[in-house]
Length: 126
Image (cartoon, rainbow, N blue to C red; front, side, top):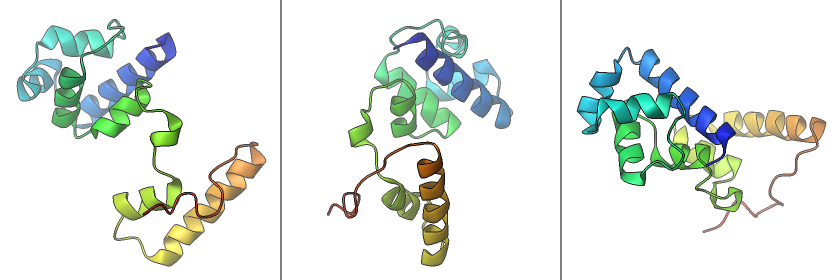
């Protein structure tokens, strides 16, 4: 894990814990890990966290494993879902026109910042 990935993970864990109003000990208790592990992760001091402990802490904080793995660089970009399938899975209650509207904004931002997403149909794998 790079230093920036450690920082990203630390920020994710800390902000989610504080948003939920939990203490480090509280998270550790729910996750079944040592409070020192939670503290060390929040301070960016663990270079290679154990997947099981990271999943447990994420579970205690309501953070999906995929989000944690992406933060620490364990999921290559090609394995992450494209935007439309992600929106349909994560926000099932959104009407189709809202998904289309969000995609249009995302496409505009991608063009403005020189990013390239999937080609047509590439994100619609069965």
